[in-house]
Length: 402
Image (cartoon, rainbow, N blue to C red):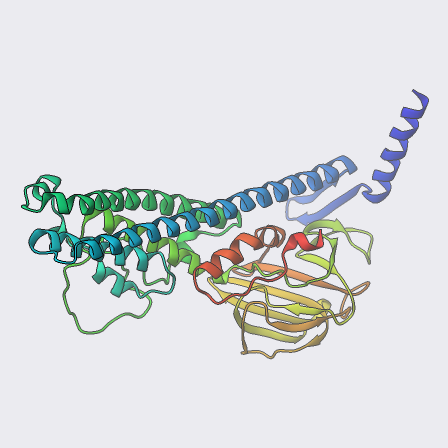
């Protein structure tokens, strides 16, 4: 019992030494207000943050793993259907009449499905490829044809195509919900990211923003397209547009080799010994360590900035910005457009700093938010950006330094 009490006493004294009691005092017109931050409250806040970060990392990992396998399975299934179609056409080289029509319609559907699941395809061209409702024939129409026996394999493949469309639509809708959920966990509005996209969820699938135009040349799609194919088209393209919009999210960890030396929020100020708000993450490392742009954007600040010392700020669009402080060297200039993962500076200890580290901030509409969730979700966001054809290269993950 004595040994247990001694251990408990040692733990309590250590916790109080590392997390002493603090008081935050501010003056208002009605008087003075005080908030007491005891050792227990500080430990609970740190524990809660760790739990949230762990949950976010696990959820992101499961989402990424499931979606990678899902896409691979769909690609394999499409390849199998394509191979069967080639064999059937080869075996029925003298196709005529309704048999030839069905073979052509199925081939058109197959081409549409293959094109839809590949990145970087033009939205308007894909819309023009949508199968028209007039291409659809019922099973009774097919079996009434003189070549009923010959057309039966095509009818079976057509049924498989329609089942595949239903599964792919469900998967796209689920992945869209997961992506929207991730964006919301980062404190962002998915609709805001989509605001300047050339695609939305209207009946036509297109919005009137984003600089569009040209002569009007009417086609039969997507208005009179087969409902199942049109539904898949709209779901998949909305997903691709949202994932492409992820490029503005700071997801590239800005330092490859580091350790966290201070977190976001109220902390013990290293200079005054008083409680103070810390608007970013401190990532300690070696002098001259390369600093990378967390997302593509335009450099808005590159120079001396008071307590930040040498500082770089990058605007990424949609009100998102990142700030990099205490740098030993700045390698960019205001107005320069940088890519995600590009080296923009070197780590240092300029400004109000006790040692070599990077002070990293994420800001939304000028307001500092906790950067940690963005770094914890970096693996999924980078993979989504890469899959949407943004040209991003997968960079260092937050877990590398943990």
